[in-house]
Amino acid sequence: MRRLLFAATMFAPVLCAPVVAQDRETATARIIDEGTNHSQVMPTVQQLTDVIGPRMTNSPAMRRAESWTAAKFAEWGLKNVHKEGFPFGRGWSIERSSVRMVTPRAIQLTAIPIAWTPAAQVSAPVIVAPIRRERDFDKWRGQLKGKIVMISLPGTGDEPGEAPFQRLSGEDIAKLDAFDQPRNDPEAQARRLKRLGFPKALDTFLKAEGAVAYATRSRGDGKLVHGEGSLFERADDPQMPGIEIAAEDYRRLARLAKIGPAPTVEIASDVRFDDSDMNAYNIIAEIPGTDAKAGYVMAGAHLDSWAAADGAADNAAGSAMVMEAARILAATGVRPKRTIRFALWAGEEQGLLGSLAYIDQHLATRGAPGEPRLNGDHAYYGWPNRWPITPKPGYSQLAAYFNIDNGSGKLRGLYAEGNAAVVPIFRDWLAPFDAMGAANVVASRTGGTDHVFLQSIGLPGFQFIQDPLDYDSRIHHTSIDTFDHLKADDMRQGSIVLAGVLLRAANAEKPLPRGPLPTKPVVTDPLAYSVDDD
Image (cartoon, rainbow, N blue to C red):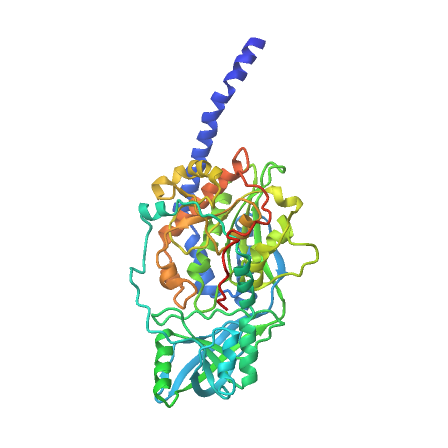
């Protein structure tokens, strides 16, 4: 009996390995079947866009989106569905808006109120007064009273030099497989933080000079507008109505002002502030794990958007794919070792504030005790440069985080974010999706979205490679970011790939490798002279 038991023990790993592989293959097949034949990703994203619409953080529409997504998670059988609040600021929404040139002839202009600026009912001549920084104020003192101040240079056009719609080739992806050496330039960081005070200073200056409104030029041609703004905290209380005008219309006004007399523009905007709840809310849901000591893996996307359109590619698409991955896994009845947590973040457009709040609450703090809370761009640029990093008890529980926030393009693989040890692991996890085009792993880092602060504290946060389509060329934050530009086949593929990767991460024997806890770096180039670009 002992001899037979010994022999069975010796052969157990050999016998178990095919069973584990078979279980993985069965789970993958069920994920693909559920994600193709029973997909709900497009009805989900259509509800977020056509029905709910633009989801500015703390706006009435965002509140509807918070309630609807939480209810959907619960309907699909996810557990521990809840909201997590964090201090943000004012809600703001556009009820209606009209901007017209009324002299020398009447014409409707393509324009949008700048977010978090007040309503306006004004008709006044324009003045082209380029103001980029505070030292420009002196040039225009005494000249702006009663005027709509055009603070941007008009420019001369930006016709594209390459196709606006792109899918990644193998060569394109290969170029991403490069190590990006980090750089630390404290003087540049200080200059950037100093410039963050400009919007408030501009508002104060224009009000004191008696201007009635200001206008900026859209950064892209094609009659596109964006409407981004930054004065969302209650203490900011902007006084000056602001509008962004399409580049073609802006240049027409500037040309007419150049030859004189200055054209008259009429602004009629009805915008609403909502101070009823200054907290923003992340939406959290889970598929519980079977091993309470194994920690959790996580997927996330930001639910908030800007107001120029419906926030479809940015980022209802990513939110819907995260939700669909949750639905697929719940529908297939998986029982992962680790809990799989799903997050829909708020305040991403104002500085990754939702994911930062999650880190502060659950994972780690940065800086010395008692340092003031940062908000908006001050958090985005300032928080990563606070030292030391102090892990919380939950720091070790997060085994992996995966983010989607680059439109509706097909997932092509994962950025390793400079973590060489995860490359072979990711290639293994993505291998079942090679035929879907999603098996690439590249070394480089990505920035600007909700995995970034996790990376900055040494945790394994990752972003997917995606086909860009026309995301950067004309969709991102613009007035045409609607359902029409989403690609259903790509979004079904993305939901399936995300679900498969999450399940592998949740059932992996070990958590993903992570680097050491970051410490304050030395200056990258201590011999360089600073450039005063203020």
